[in-house]
Image (cartoon, rainbow, N blue to C red; front, side, top):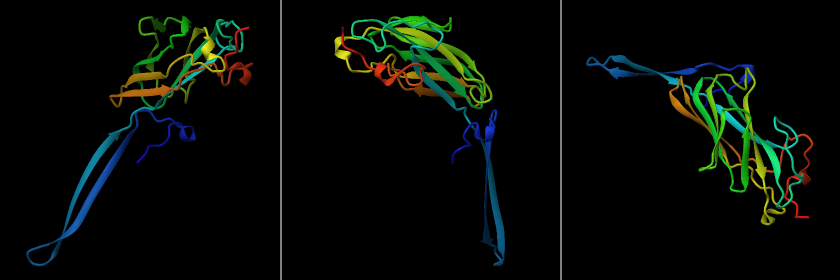
Amino acid sequence: FTTVVPGTNGTVYTNPTINLNLTVSGAREGQQGVPETVMSAATIQATVASAATLKQTAAHFTGPFANSGPMPPIAEQRTTYTVVWSVSNSSNIIANTIVTAVLPPYIQFIAGQDKTIAFDKGSRTVSWAVGELKAGTGFSSQPRTAAFQVSLLPSLSQVGQSPQLTGQAKLTGQDRFAQVVIEATAEPASTALVGDQGFSSSMGTVAPKK
């Protein structure tokens, strides 16, 4: 069976459980040939884990950073972009929440929006220490967001392509109510800036060097 989709009819349930009741009955022939009713019952309570979602988008013209460089990007010239992470959470508090993504070797990390964003040069991993993610985030309240700025230096071999700005993003945390690990993923962000105001499809691919 499946549970109700979070936010159905505008309702988000906190710490939800499902009670399952099973009853079995039948007739047993007694020693005198008189049927005797026998019955057994069992009850179990299932704890429903929270449903977290993660979105990863990129922008050049919008966001908390002032970006620079040619648009579309040009081979062997730097263009900067903003990567935005957005997380939502349905029913239970998720503790120790963290979002991570690995940057491709041709991408340079510039800065995070605040101190919760960190970059490990050795593994080329960007991480966001979300911390406690409250129930209803993104449903009864706005999603939690964070952003960081990166720089792309396209190579000649990337002309005509839309290079990835990040790898796949991953969220992990601990559901405090269900006591299970919660995970969510988001597809890599690329120079095809879907949804960025001022962006057109012709700006998504690397142009030849002038």
